[in-house]
Image 1: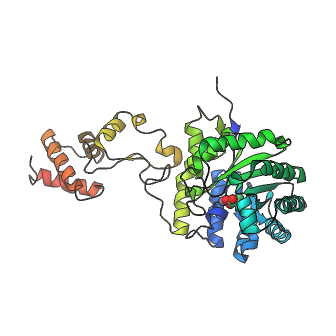
Image 2 (image 1 turned 30 degrees about the horizontal axis):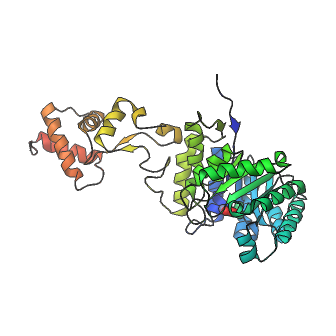
Image 3 (image 1 turned 30 degrees about the vertical axis):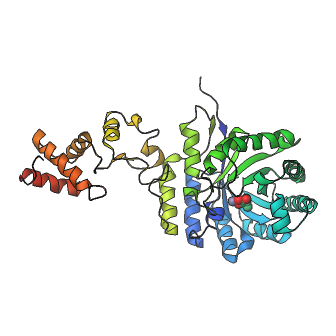
Length: 393
Ligand code: KIV
Ligand code: ZN
């Protein structure tokens, strides 16, 4: 019997949290190009910008809200009237709009950064959520630094924000401080203790300072969150946000333990990653999960041999499932005979057993000095073997 899967809302913040990271800023045409792809990818919500932050941010949000019709378009605003008015203005043309208002709730932020009391914080949240509701029924409230906030106070904040009209409650791990078991407990506890928690969707927004953003987001989902905030390639402030492609594929590959699904067309993931890299001129780390150049590349002889016999030996998903072209058996110092023979066959070349042995030796020797041996290298080596210029050691 197939398990029914609950929908997880994918809230993409590449154009806001991602774009505000050093080196990732995008102009308006670039934002629009990426927003079109996010739409095609199937994200539920695009956070298009923080309109009060700059005229370019406001313009980018407005243009995305004008052109992109299917997903909800969100705009960020602090708990201030002017911010909320700017967000509402930029979202005016949107088919479906969300105002996302936030205020820090940890004592550290209240005392040291904002210099306001908890009571002032609470009343600013209530006023802002109520004000935002005058522009749209879809209002998200984020308690910045939620994971380091006092739990009793956070419960009061969440209850008050929902009563004031927030339909989504986001509990960010703003500084990437939490760990998975704690993230699970945190979401479970807040939902259990807040009397009106069933009136809102809970959301995770995890940063990657300890490399745990995706793990913490998945734990939050297990603890009751039904929205995840994430970015393409995991870009975002400092070490970044939870990576959209990793979250989506973790939910898909481990559906046996995680009975949730998203509306993402996973075959578009690689293209989205490449487009972002092109638009920002920032390369994708080669060993990046899912979308990195090496995510489906195999060089070790034992792995290549396993892959040629049955790809499931070393791959938990197929490259085509995420839009990567094909498994790459990289020829180099670590390659096995089987992979060399296979590549020779793929190139339409026929060699005797003796020639193949010589070729294999030539490949491993060249691999000592060269990263990744290409097809042209291989053809040249085959010519030399046939001309008798390589021999057994
Ligand atoms: O990390 C964070 O706390 C944020 C909020 C503004 C949602 O980005
Ligand atoms: Zn953030």
